[in-house]
Image (cartoon, rainbow, N blue to C red):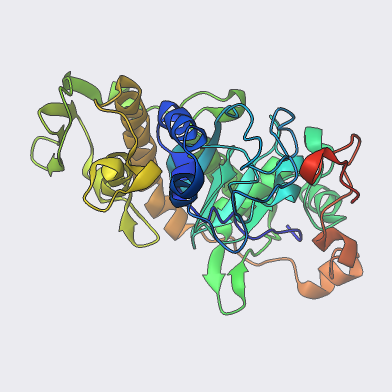
Length: 374
């Protein structure tokens, strides 16, 4: 996947939140303020200030490009993003508020796109990754899934070698199953043996389906044997802590409980951090002692939608924990040699494959309403 882009840098945490209603409330508070108070709430940086305009993000045609101080415009509809590993949140898609928005990623963001982030374990999402998730590799270089972000000639070589059609999703699944951190970065050996290739694809597609959590028209993952986490007692008021009882496999959110929650889900880590406690902390951050300004605006009561998200997340983490031993034990066997890849013209990838494709089939509005020239 030769083309990669650095992650989005928000510059101010208040533009993203687990609750879209909170983002609309923050927008209303900001646009309803004036002068020094608006400056304080905005939290200016070297890249973004209220007295500066910015181009509209691709695909967000309703966004204003005037100076925020002069004409904020209507609140843009929040979009779904991946804020941290396995933590799907919402973002205000206004480039005037985001330090580094990566427009090249927004241009290829559509219902066909998938994004790969190495955290350092490979993580695939249908939502735009935001924050400390490393470099982002889109699966497709153009909207509509028209051109894969893969070294030219790779799909044809793998198809001819293994005797069947190979899709970009196959390669993505293989990366999930066979890729490992190595001395030269993240290394993905390409199996020479068709049987090992098929075994890796089977495991990789299982991992891919679990990570996508039903996105792109797929079936939401389910635990085998009819086991699934249920709400045993509803969350009332605001839960102050998240607790886990290993003996009963029960997750406690204040006075609410969810079970069964396998130990593998509770213990699952990404970037050295337990996912479930981090997910809960992100949803209570606006009530914490360090919350200030717009970041302190959030729901007064625990939304029922968060409990539904929690149930889906528990299932995802439990399945990934069950698949972890199979992934750790998977051996791709002898790989295709560098010489064979060079002979086939797959290596080295051409310089153009490392740059974003030209996808401008429409005009994009630049700062102050002028059309951008790219």
